[in-house]
Image (tube, rainbow, N blue to C red; front, side, top):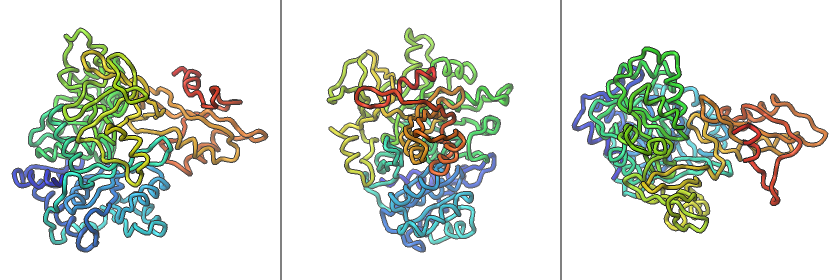
Length: 508
């Protein structure tokens, strides 16, 4: 059940169809794509000396070579560790160390920084820039035959931060990935040869997960030359590629249709935008449908249940006749085909429609557990159900509406940001006594990070000082966008900070 068979089969049937593109330039057709993967897989198990089950990190800004490295890792019977390229060097260090990655593939702008970590990481043998001639030579090594993989063999370590701030590696198997692909066809849309997925969102996360169905059905993986999301560039790519598909955070939809470049743009090639990773407000999805037509599908999932918990189909979003259309558009849809979903109370008892509780899910897409973390695994997968930490309720028709995030997670631009991590970083400043991080609504990004700071008595500190201190320890995009200095944090009788009161002060 090696997931790399998706490419092997497609390359046999459609060898001359385009497979990888950089902007509007086709960089590989399926025959060449599969040949490069087989050669690199041969190098991994031969010249580079890796063994079955070894971990290989992919720390790359969006680039076509990501798809070659990813499938080579799987073909060779190894485990991929895709990592968000926007993280801080300390976060890279932790993930590389925790995963015991032996090799890291990187884009050029990250390779030297990552190579500096090798002396501190005994398992990490080398960092390979995918822009170097030496990497290109690896793809020309003798090809490796497809390695066998059992359904439950580990394929992907998906690092997702926990409330402690330390990332946890969700163990995703070949079965999990195949189930996610089949669920796409069951609940999102069909794919025809030549359809394109444009990766304006990170390939190491949701957008990359939605690249797999395109490979299974001979679609094109399109990487924007910017490596990310630029509305004008995205609109040009839509105009170039018929049947364009996307995975977007809701804020990206808002930014696309609000861009000056949208005026007069030809979006007739757009096939579907799958949105998820944060709340899409009813007014926003109505505006998006008016601007782009009913070409939207919503998903609600987590890294632990990749892209699959509930969904709102294109048909449901398109249906203007439903008497409860407003409530449906504000929901996260119904139970996906491949899972069971419940809302439960604090004792894990199922709750009836209309009652709010924690959302739990089980099915073949759900992770096997957390890497090297049996305690978190036991807690999160207790009773055989993945406990999401999200609060919500079902209605009588089976639509799930999320009410709150029990872990106080902030979602900014579709990226999960965990307050505890930022709080711990800022508490190391000698002038900070207490701190609390909350999210504040933002028109473009969905939410932004805000800090409430209590300074130590006799100390003075400025927002600029705290900003510099924060950037030294965590990724820049996680830092607070505004600091409020207060005398004390509001707390309940048990000493717990009342973040709801802080949000009320912000008007959120």
